[in-house]
Amino acid sequence: MNQDLATTAEGIAQAITAFVSKRVGADVPADQDLFESGLVSSLFAMELVVHLEQAFSVQILGDDLKRDNFRSVQAMTALVLRLNGAGHAAGA
Image (cartoon, one colour):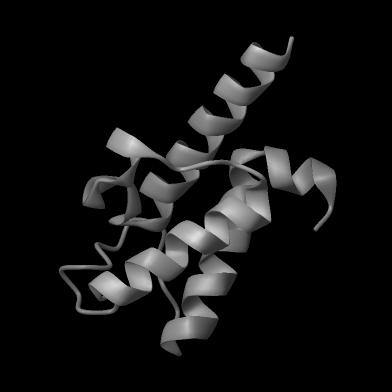
């Protein structure tokens, strides 16, 4: 993945949308509640955790593992941005 796209909200959202849409076989709006719509099961939520960790070089631990962080593409984008920001601040 292009490094610039991997660090912008738009790029992160595009990458997550592409992954989820391919996995569920349907277009997924960024604000769609994936659990309420039935597109995401608990098992797929764990796949999302692994995918986000690998695709964006973040660690999702503890309180960040709550369902609300994976409810929509927007929520996952915000999580990745927050974790990236925390990682950059810690490494500075």
